[in-house]
Amino acid sequence: MSSETSTVTTGPPPPPVTPGPSAVGAPVSLAPGRRRPGSWWRTALLVVALTVLVVPFAVPTLWMIASSFKPLNEIFANPPRLLPVAPTLDSYREAFAFQPFARQYANSLYLAVTVTVITLLVSSLAGFAFARIPFPGKNAVFLVVLVGLLVPTEVTIIPLFQMFRQLGLVNTHVPLIVVPAFGASAVLATFIMRQFFLALPVELEEAARLDGLGRLGMWWRIFLPLARPALSAVTILTFLGSWNMYLEPTVYLTTPELFTLPQALTRYTDAYGGEMWDTQLAAATMTVVPVLVVFLLAQRQFVEGLAHSGLR
Image (cartoon, rainbow, N blue to C red; front, side, top):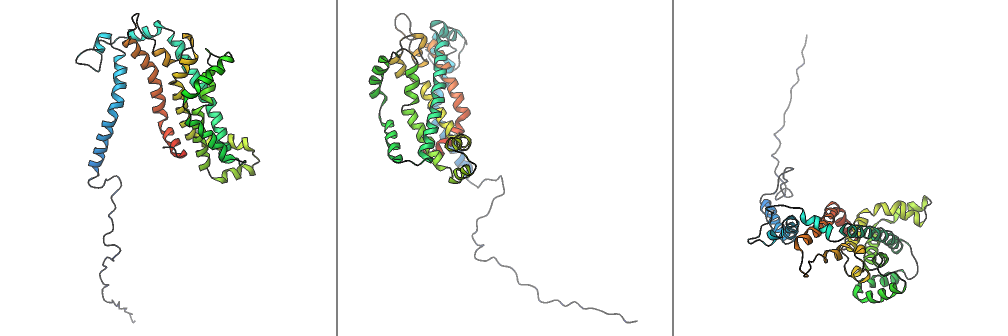
């Protein structure tokens, strides 16, 4: 019985692998979650710089809110203290007792909401037309619309006052709705919406045509839902502009029950014409805090909307 044996032949060992020229000097990738050495101090410097920049804006607001709970003698205490020693709500009660502050608060709220809704409707339609509907002289008409941003409010307020007086609309809220909704703020809103609609791809419009949608259908069903960042930016800008409006209410309104909040804040004076600082700070706090809350909740959409529109 014969047995077969097999022999395994081995060749010379392979040469060692040396790194090629492309591997020499290649950047070393860090593990996920690890920072590049020396980056921590840049982050620390950035945090310190941002903190220093925030102080001039945050401290007055914090002082206003804290002082609204102080009695008058603590507001002018020396040295000054940020937090009240004996907190009280008397200033808030006096704000509503001195004048119809609740009615004035409601006036500002409904005016701001009404102007914002009208501006959103007008600016989105106008922006869609300037961005997506071709018509003769479109660029020239848009340039004429933008000229409205260059005209100061003080230039047009006297002719507008005479016009509304002839119509019998002075001492009403109609001028405070019509003028902002079709004025400079509406022009800026139209510009933001137009720039956003121009950035959307043409394929969306072609697909909408294949589905049988008309111009209004495209605007309502496709373009408007995609324009939420721009709509958020327009909402915040318009709401704040109407909420803080002071010149127009001062010109058109004479009845305290029709006043808005900026007018109401100037009327907290005593019998000698001196400022009621504690009451005024309480009213100012109630005026400012809701706006700050709205902006903090929608600041991401606000920045995104401005970035998409190309406005800096």
